[in-house]
Length: 50
Image (cartoon, rainbow, N blue to C red; front, side, top):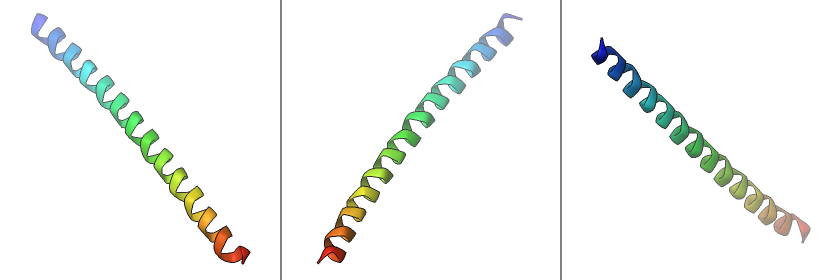
């Protein structure tokens, strides 16, 4: 009985930790994509502005 409770608690902790890590990772990737997109947009404006 107690072993099942321990396994469930560990699984919950792992799921929550994985979700937080995944959320942080996707947020970082989205930030990088937006930074790259704004950089490319700035370069395009410089190129086509001449």
